[in-house]
Image 1 (cartoon, rainbow, N blue to C red):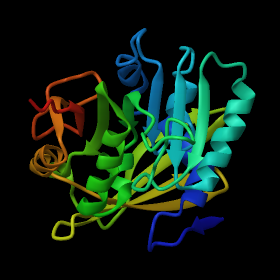
Image 2 (cartoon, one colour):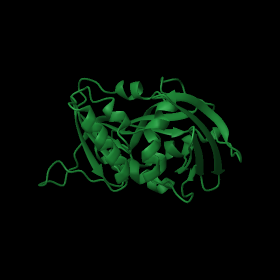
Image 3 (cartoon, rainbow, N blue to C red):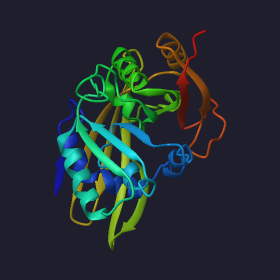
Length: 264
């Protein structure tokens, strides 16, 4: 049986069913990377695009307050079920259904001040799902509004220098998970003028073939440098992988570590 999803926009309802399996099969090995920024002083973390809770569920061995934001109720439903199974957790996780471009968390009901966090993160390329450059700028502005003056804001992007449009599916990986064999294939379409990357993913099981589709808006490193400067963020590090390797034009990822710029 072959199942295909709509190819006009990312269907998070369908992705929520396969998201964790895909990340088990194609792991970016980013969990230790995010844990490395969680110090004993880290008490409050804001995650933009929490999805199915892949990152916090693996990081809540620490006693932190974690707020996970996502615009997909289907993703959040999966996250809630996983949290329930994992209890008791040392940390506290709060889930909020909201567009990351519109988030407004207050300290309390009697103030206009935003609740500030030690760490604001956009894992799994979630910033690229915010839409156009203008929308991604808004999403970063919102993150900065909820960031402490000595906090860190972290986001990762695909390196668009490596994008190559492909007409046919190519093999990615074959693995056995819970005694079930999975094969993953992918192809992509790239609109360099509009800066849109369309990703097609095929998951092949013994009696089932699933095709998933996602749309991402990409930025070049020069765009990010300009945007962060405009909104008062200072880039303090740029990595090319989750082992904190130096970025170059052939790196798979572009990972930005930012803080609020000090104004004197």
